[in-house]
Image (cartoon, rainbow, N blue to C red; front, side, top):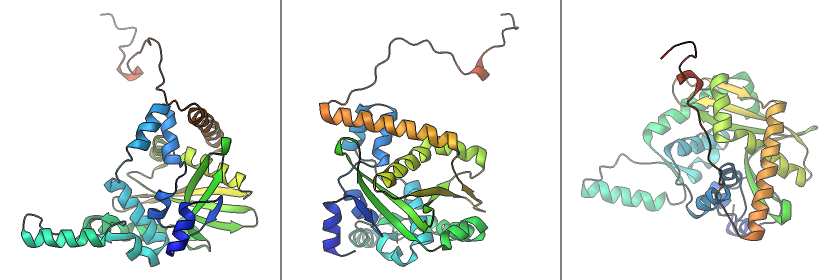
Length: 285
């Protein structure tokens, strides 16, 4: 993407932008799902997250590296770099690291150990018939959508891959996980908000007049032998996610209008410890 294209995205108009680098996407002044999801706690949590953006964690860097290696290999040198094993206790090591940091500015940095996992994780995706089919299908990677939502709120999303079909857009989302077993990954969906991210993106596509043909999540474990599962969200989960996102956006719009970002305050609440920790009633003390 040339400089002019970057400037156009940084003063964005609603629409679809293909092949947008992560560094450019982050700079787009619009509401994204990661920020909106803080509404599950309170508006105050969202404001704090906006004022104190979270640094990229090693897990996030590994996930980004896998996305690029698996879906946009030609952009690897532009988007990702592997840190040298420099001994920063020595002068030569510090000079090597300083030189590397200048070269790596704006890129996702991973360690050599992380890179040793990226390649077999990508191969594991290619070994799973459904995941391989989705990855090899003709489509576009790192697709940014920008739309005006309630009260003119400018929103944005970045989809790992889109596949255009007669029935609409199929969305493909690659997720790293400690355990791809369905029972365990259900918790990941709830914990990390994969269902509300799906709802947020579906909402954006609807505003843009793009028919959605569903999302497939490719979940790949970060540890060998890197098992892979391909997952779609059920109707009840999508219904719940739609309701949550609708409520969050309405509350966000209200907070923007009133310039108030309060905590949620409850009265005195009685709490029991978990059921498994309670003493059976038939036991006499």
